[in-house]
Image (cartoon, rainbow, N blue to C red; front, side, top):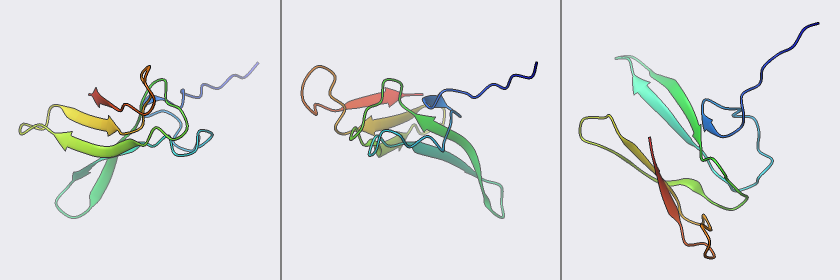
Length: 87
């Protein structure tokens, strides 16, 4: 019996091709290797829903160790109140 694992579509390096929640959004993390950009991670919020706009704003700490990703329309109990996720 052969089984394969497919990571969930949320979190870091989940299924980037899963676009079942239109407008939910995502963020991508790239690094520069001196000659080209290399994708390091695909990031999608947990509990994402259509229209959340995750990735609409991003910020990186000065030392590069903390990434903040905004979801402008995340509901969080109030209609389109917004949220930020830290990684």
